[in-house]
Length: 455
Image 1 (tube, helix red, strand yellow):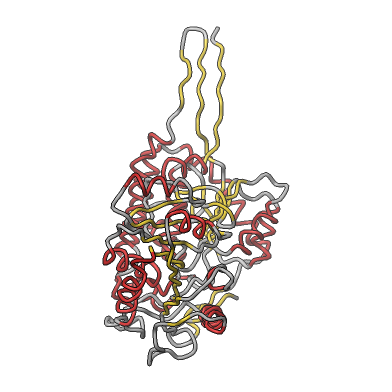
Image 2 (cartoon, rainbow, N blue to C red; image 1 turned 90 degrees about the vertical axis):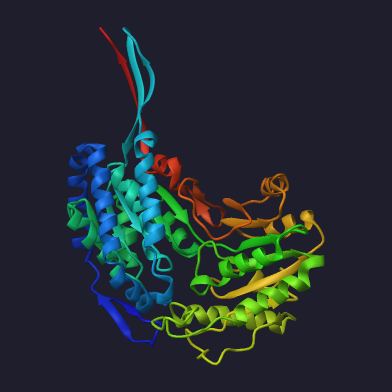
C-alpha cells in the first residue's frame, strides 16, 4: 500500500494498493501487445487523441487545483499546472511530423535509401511529485505521439495525478492498454526494468533514485533518461537590472516552497550591488504569507512532507552554526513541521552543505563576487548541472559566460522556465538524456535504416 500524507495537516489523503509482481508483468504484457497496433495508426490520429486527452485534463482543473494542494502543498492561488502542461503538449504535437519525418538519402531508379524513426515499444515514465502534471507530460505526450505505449508510475505523494491523467486520456479514446497508470513499489519497478520490460525508461527524481534505475537497467541495453538533482545558480552582473533580478531570482528560489527541479539555490552578486540586492531580496520574502494552501491569501504553502522540511532546517542550522547569517525571522505559522519559514542566508561558503547538497526547499544563499571569472568558477563548483541564470544587459557577455558554465540550460534575465522548443537536459549528477524539443522525439525513438536495391 502506498499512502499520500497531506502536508496540510498530516492526515492520510490517499492510499492505493501496489500491483503484485504478477499483475505488473501482466500489465506490461498488455502494453507490449498493443504497441504495434497503436504505432500503426496514422500520426495525425495519435496526435489528435493525445491533444484531446490534454484538453480533458484542462476541463478537470477546478478539481485538480485543490487536489494538488492536498497532495503536495502548492497554494490554490497559483491555479495548478495546466498552462505549462498544455503548452508542452501542444508544442510537441506541432513539431511531431517534422521531428519524426523520414530522412531520405536516395530514391532513384537503382536504390531507395532512407532512415526512419521507429518507437522503442513500451516507455516507462517514473514521475515526481513537485510538478506532477508538467513533468509527466514532458514524456507521456511525445512518447504516445511517436507510437510507443506508456506505463506511468507516479510518485507516492501524488497518486491522484496519474489517475486523473489516465481518466482524461482514456476518455479521449486512448486505450487502457496503450496508456496505463500503475502503482508500483521500488522492488517491482526495478524487477520490471531488469526483465527488459521496456524499450525506454524516463525518470525524474533524486540522484539515488536515478542510480537505482541505472543499476536495474544494467546489462539490459534499455535506454534511460534521467533528470535528477540540482543546485542551480544565478549570477547578477554589475550591469544587471537589480529589481528584475531580485524579483525573478527570489521567486525562482521560493516558488512551490523551493521544490523546483530548476529552482535557484545559489545567487552570486557583483560585490558593488551585494547589499542592495540582499535588501531587495529580504523585502520580497518578508512579504510572503506562509499558510494553508487552500487559503487564497496564502502565497507560500507547506513543503510536501515534514522530512523534506527537516532536511532544509538541518542544512540551514549547520550553516548558521558555521557562521552564516539568516535574514528572515521565523514566521508565526512555521510549525516546525512541513510549514517552513523561507530563508535567505549570507556569509556562506562552499564548504557548507547548504551550498553543496540539493536543498529543494525555500532557502537561498547569496554571495558577493569580484568579477565574471569568480562567478563562473563558483557556479561550476557543484556536482550538479541543470540550469544557470545570468543577469546582464549585454547578450554577448551572457553568451560568453554561458559557454563556460557546465550545465544543461543557461538563461539570460529569466529563470525557472522550461521552454518546450529547447532540449531539457542536464550534466554531471543531474543526469543524462534530454526531453522535449526535436531531441526529445529522437530519444523516444530509434533510427532504422532501409537500404533497398531496386530490380
